[in-house]
View 1 (cartoon, rainbow, N blue to C red):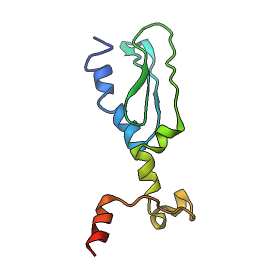
View 2: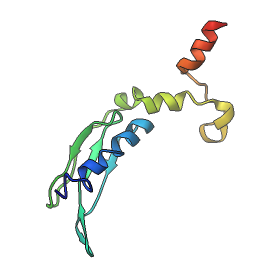
View 3: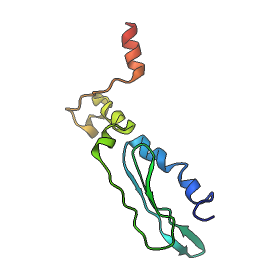
Length: 116
């Protein structure tokens, strides 16, 4: 129950995949195993892909390591990567540089251009 219950895996699956998806990144989640005072730390360490899929996970109180193969191609196809490339340079020039050129046109802008 500690692994899969409302304080374990089920709780993590409410937000971890969404963060990986939103940001277009591989997400390595680490969590201690065992007791921390009165609280049981359930581990559930995992690696999540940019689309929110769990690639590898640990459901054990043993000393294990989660390993996954990651690829650049999956990152470049993710939503988070597209959002990053769609940033308007005039708003984000201090973060992304003055030479950034948006290479993505959001669908809501494209529809407005098509109407003109």
